[in-house]
Image 1: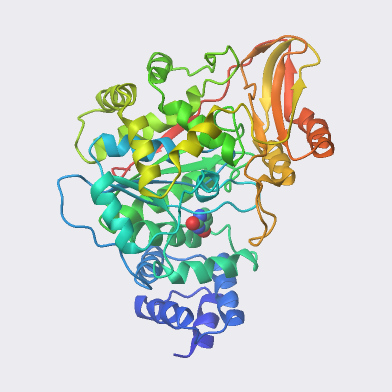
Image 2: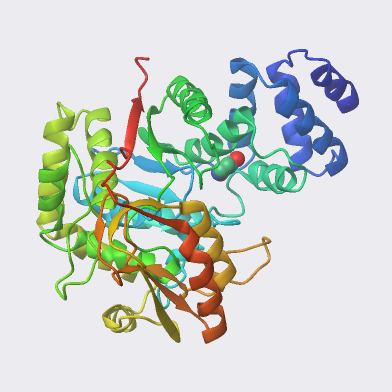
Length: 462
Ligand code: URA
């Protein structure tokens, strides 16, 4: 293949044929095409874009660069959700066992965080003994037996994405709609799904900063997912404020388990129209992740409708909330943990602790009023700098650090009310995080109505 002429064609705005795209993906994965040439092609794609046919060819070539999961035919539909990432976004953790209890099979292949966005695998790594690296055989076995698995991609799944993503990361070509579409969907198509729900975030801490860009990305992914035979829907969700009241790996696992506890979904159903976050923990502390619950139930409800297991979203939400309230997903969570090697005794002991980081400090309101801002980007940066995220792919992670008891927009606070608790490795880190974090909050004399969490749903009929 004369790859140089393909780079020149794309640079000049021409359209590539599917077999040319398949060819260069195959040769790059095999190590025949050098990184510098592929980086040039990625930059040409970044500026010139890809047509729908080209994006489809790229996605399928990337999916076929490795093994595709082969699951036996079964009455239970194969489903998954993918999030474009954010701060405190732990939806996958409670969602996988909930979906398994609703009669789905969930081969949830997840990723790690980079920069300020958290990664599902990093969160799960904070569970004693839990294994996220499984063979394809084990993934299939667990999905069939337990109904759900959350793990990393095997070396043999979508290797083209691994190589291309690493190159995009260091060549300034990550925020390209066709490249993101191909990257995300190639991995999801390798799971052989029947239905997929996408959570495409926009806002200060999201990959797509504006609703317009998020909508473009969501539409491209929905069109392509459906064209490739997977019933795909996307929700556009706000990421100006963190999801839930906790961010940081272990703290998010804790909040996910709280989300699975019996009784909490009642709150959500009654607040579905306007989910103001007001619930409290048994100890009277601030915690109720009504926004988290809403998103978990919405994802489940869409998948129920997409697979015709429910006739309407209203009925589907009730079905999902009833299932959550039955306590079965909480048991399924434990079953999934045990299936993936976790030490349940050690996990439960850890869960009972208020904190696992050595130092916890409280950020307090300086005046009474209403929270009008809780900036996800700044909170994400502070957590990353506390050691909870990575600055490079090789960085280690401190699973215990983070922020909890976040006060959220729309909530009333008194002078000295807690705006957030900071979990840090030491006094000096805690002090500097506390000082930086104050700028993440604004308190106004009047209550402003918080922005809606889910602003739009894009489905295949559009
Ligand atoms: N997540 C992915 O898996 N790929 C992208 O390109 C962006 C986010």
